[in-house]
Length: 128
Image (cartoon, rainbow, N blue to C red; front, side, top):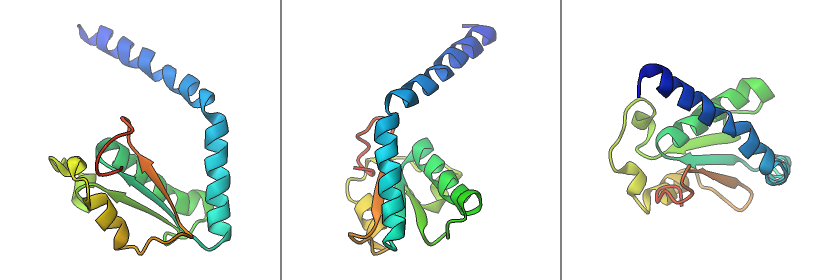
């Protein structure tokens, strides 16, 4: 493909996002209600992800502090490969089946908290 075709195809794919979100708005609403309930019960919200998905979780967690006035202690993001993976690819980190659990243990996740896994495939081992 030439550059204009590549850009056109990316743009066509981007247009699918709002439609995909619209289809799952009821599920998103349920999740938001659960997060609010978690915060009202003094719990925390955790994002856990790998690669680009993990980076988006880190960005969202940091933005929620200013956008919604949420304490940085209430919303925490973990990413496969740790903080170094925010800027650099850590090969194989997403395939570790136990590290996600171990990373959450360091934060003493409890039944009062909610953990949201972010994975485009829905089956990234670190997230699952």
